[in-house]
Length: 171
Image (tube, rainbow, N blue to C red; front, side, top):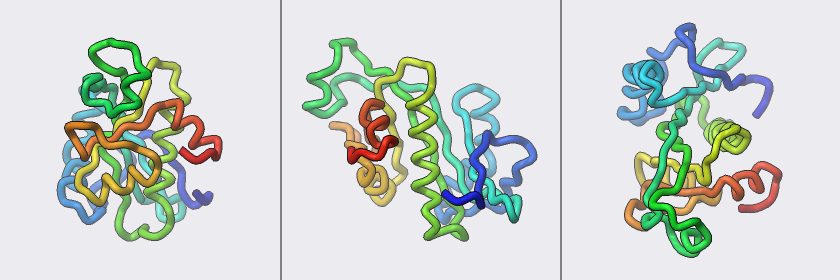
């Protein structure tokens, strides 16, 4: 990503009213609900701010999560401890304002989320993404995320794979 954008934690100074990614559910969440999730500590939110226009160009949220071991696809599940759930971090929402299409900003936001999780000093085996539709699921799949057995729009990426992805290796 160019020096045109800075990715930073969402604050009250960030204007959210004009954000439009083209999906009303995502737009409504970002404009109306994200701050409540932050206050309740349900999620953290990071924004990509256009430094020239001082405008929010995109965002993503992260939340602690877990997933039943039985939902993890084989052969991944066979290599995990037999605990009932797998500790994880969820990318719950990710959106890029449609006026910034074609700049690779969605990918930059995803990689920032992956980097944030991979470098965090917490125990998390995987990164999950809750895709809003099939197009979003395909976006995550292109970066090595695998759909869960019983939920095709929830995708899974082991943190070890994420670390290889960040280092430039193919997933």
